Length: 257
Image 1 (cartoon, rainbow, N blue to C red):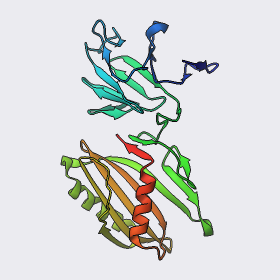
Image 2: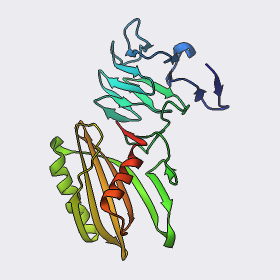
Image 3: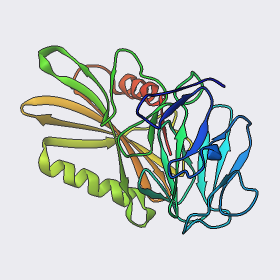
Image 4: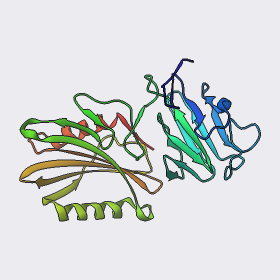
């Protein structure tokens, strides 16, 4: 394993996934995840990531390393980057895990195998930036077109009341229609949808400052949380099916959850 510590910063660069104590009292607390198996964190003797800080229970969480991912699964109350989680979430470089008063930092810069970037404070993770797009860590993808129009794919996240995606979409579309002109919407039957508990793809047409636009919105539902990918572009004569397929080709570079 090679590592290079950045001067003046506790963050270290590793070529394999590493979990370190951000509240370490012992520098030897860092653990290299160099095998594809499940690791356990908590207060119990013999766990892989052990902490005796208040609030940490015997087996508090697990991290399962696969061939190109590390999944954090809470067994007790756990937060990721100050957001409470109730289900398995894929980790990216720089993520901080809190179990009681213990804080762990996951380090794994992109090396061709593991994803590197998370969009804002969501669970959307970037695998690669498709050409000719540029990446914004706050929102997602963007590119400049003619006439100063910025085409973008924004990635957001929202809580879905009662885990009902249909009612949630109806409310989203109703609110959108109140703030844009000439709003129309329709469901799109996509030949490929991500494997998830629920998902939906819709196409909208409306105008923004006299500019006619088309927007594709992809919704993926996991444990009452909806990951939303919205692609907004100028309206053109391109067939909907071709544009929808292109949208999904962009989404292959992202992972939610």
